[in-house]
Amino acid sequence: MHYYKNLQDWMSDSILSSLANCLPKLISEKFNTTRWGDLPLWLECLDNLPKIVGDPVNLNSGVCIGKANQLAIPHDEFKKTLMTLHPWRKGPFSLFGINIDSEWRSDLKWNRIKSHIHSLEKRLVLDVGCGNGYHCWRMLGAGAERVIGIDPSAKFVCQFLALKHFTRDSLPIDVLPIGIQDLPKNLRAFDSVFSMGVLYHRKSPLSHLEQLFGLLRPGGQIILETLIIEGKFGYSLVPEGRYAKMRNVWFIPSPRTLISWLRRVGFEGVRMVDVSITSTIEQRKTPWMTYQSLEDFILKDGSGRTLEGYPPPTRGVFIAEVPTQRLK
Image (tube, rainbow, N blue to C red; front, top):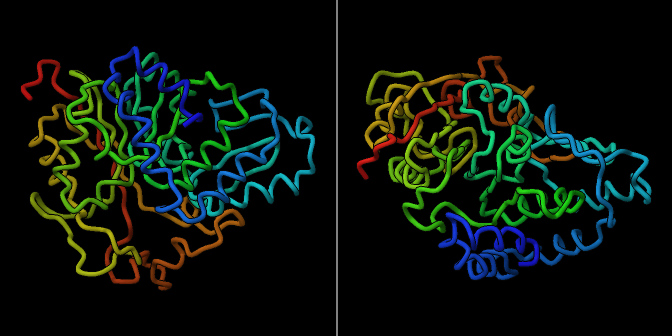
């Protein structure tokens, strides 16, 4: 829990005070060896990191912490320590001159969405299903007053903590090892909420959208990125088995269908601002993620279709607001 002392102190006197009261219990429940057998190994990795604050911390054009000449141990030794937390799914990061070349070029997604969203200056931001927090760093770099990410994977949280270890403790950015279902209902606290790559993993997509709606203050903005499929109003693909080898893909709606879902739960001003077909430029194997990746999930005939024969994985970005005079 010592990783979150500054956050809890801030929460106690903020709009998130109700969350501060239950945070220690939540973290102890989620961050334990019963659920994560390798957690002691990951925490040992964090304990063995060099005690140094990287300078500079550049979050504008990427996530770059420190310079190569600041590191007192051999770079190969440092890299080996970081590889304890393999696989690195999101990134890239530059840490004391070491390029963590992650599976996903998450910077490309950020570049697609950043010009469409409200300014994050002085905003309280939540990133749902944030992984290791790459986009959280970019949100902080865009001027957010405080960024909180949540992700149930303890390993991804440890990756974030490894990076934050090399910054000032007071930096207003945290990633918690919890899911959206662990947050108090109807917090109505956040100015901006991001949910990227989460909706299609939900058995009840409208319930997820309702949860997101309840987290936002009146006038707050949702930024939703998810898999979509071409189709008429009301159409949604429900894979009978796997989708691109993933077991837990439940609903892939057409854009018009998703827009109607967002309106149904109460959002206004709903618009789709970007569509992109996922390519092996954006998602691929690297030395930092050596397991299967997109090239193993799509047909080899050049069509881009998934192994199961579905259309090429396509992602849409949707933005909407909570009414300033909300009815629920």
